[in-house]
Image (cartoon, rainbow, N blue to C red; front, side, top):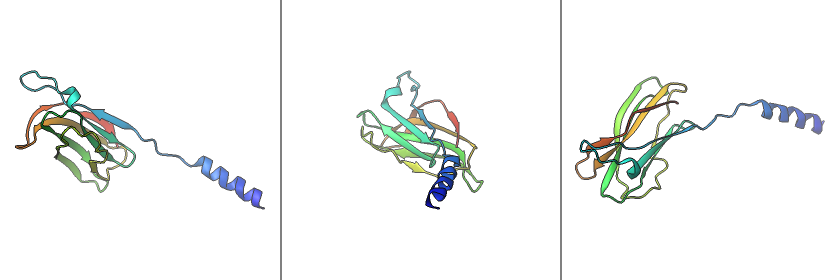
Length: 131
């Protein structure tokens, strides 16, 4: 009996689908004067759990801004800018957690900001991936 139960449970476990965690990355772009900020920071989006991580990779006195364009799980739109100043600290892996509608497109980009005035001066291209 115990063996039969173990086989049935094993089959049920083997047949269950596991969600794949797709992680997408984005980097800042160029300022209007042509300065490249690609290595100054980055942002990640993990589809499993719908969370963004932001990493300030340069101790340059600038902050980062995350622009998001997505649909929440309740069907309402999400469009906003979220500011982060890490002072060159790359440890923030859970900057923004939002329950997004599965399968819908998530757009995001990261920008460089003046950490005091929150003035955006260089942005990467928009990146789109499914939630």
